[in-house]
Length: 223
Image (cartoon, rainbow, N blue to C red; front, top):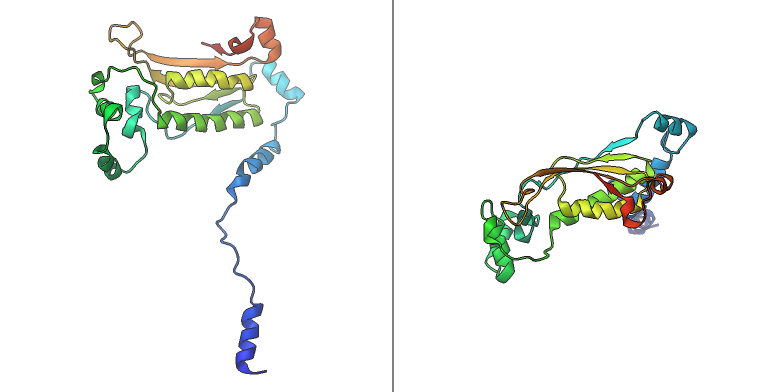
């Protein structure tokens, strides 16, 4: 066999390069999580769990994430200010704003909120992000049989709390201590204006909800 033929044969028989070790098929991540959680000690309900509940013990989860501060006025979360863009990119986009988008962008600046007088429903990227993260947290609580989910301070808005009430209808037995938020009313002389609220939401188990006479959306109690 000639040298060039031998070299050609060697190249053809060489194994394919291995896949990058860091590559992870993320489409299976949720499936792996559920499988891992199902194998953890104490996840399943046992007579010991029921006994601990009877003695006032709760399984509590603390959820931490990079929060969009809800201590500021809600208008700070709409328009360009609420979108996670590079400052230079935002500056370039500002020149193309007009109409309501321009008005809300101007009012979103600190101490300029009083410039906004319209009553409009607008999209909030931070609120969308909250709901996606909280949705995953609620799923984890269900799989791990958590009974109380505690959220950070200044991490929610009134709209978030209303959304959570609807979501808890699908999570009987779970309570959420929804982190504080600052309430902004339309008029500064409103008795609730600038109050800091802390909300506890609880969706009782069916037997408890029936005992309280709770039905429909009213099954989720708010304190």
